Image (cartoon, rainbow, N blue to C red; front, top):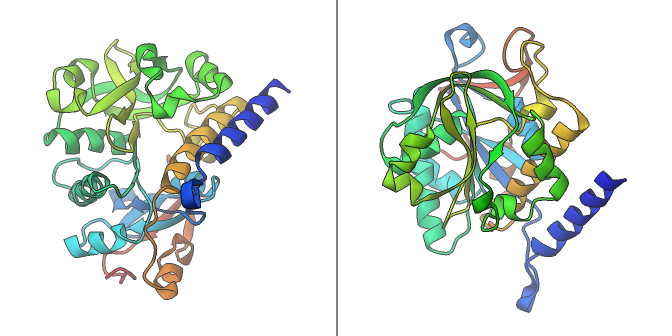
Length: 324
């Protein structure tokens, strides 16, 4: 019953704080659409397509009431301008491509710069980076590749929360106490990365420490401390080196993921938070036809049984897109 009470309290808080009003009351976008950036497939998956999005990220956003559109990596600048103006947020997913010369990195730069410009003009537009996407946010902000090899693959951990920063935090500051306690005491944050933004590098890089508020750190198997959760001071940009979506939506027996009800509550909290951020964006589609044909529901899901991801959306580079 204690968990239910916390859920109810959080639900009431969410309704009160995310509703914008007409004439001083709350106005909200009840049809948020979030883009997920594609990336190049690995060689072993090339038989299925050229680029992909793991379905776990799609499920993660949809469970909190968002719809999802794929954002194709490697397209023109005008493509990103068009899609950006019609969606309400972007998630940079995890994966295994390069963060300097890849289509994923170049496309991320376009989107990041558009988000900076929009927010500076008072046009709320949130970004979220998970794992590789978290690393990408660091690189985009610093304008250089600063990640370091770490021994942090298949590693579930509790968060070492940076308590002195919680009070000022949007993401953690009003977090229900029971979610906070789960994060701090249980191994519900799943790490699956070969590289990290170390604390030493972060705090010695002026462009990063002045831009992001560190909310948690962790330590790899060799004792190297890395940044695991942050948020931008000025912008609605958020990142986790760990995977909030996997607790609910990844079922590979090779991975040490916590699928308990408490772990799922953590997934739901972060999903709710980001989707609620997207509800403050009022970008909309230019017409109904573009809206219908851009949704990820138009694409087939492929079920795989021997990899990190259970279900994947694959795309081909020669496919046309509604935003082109």
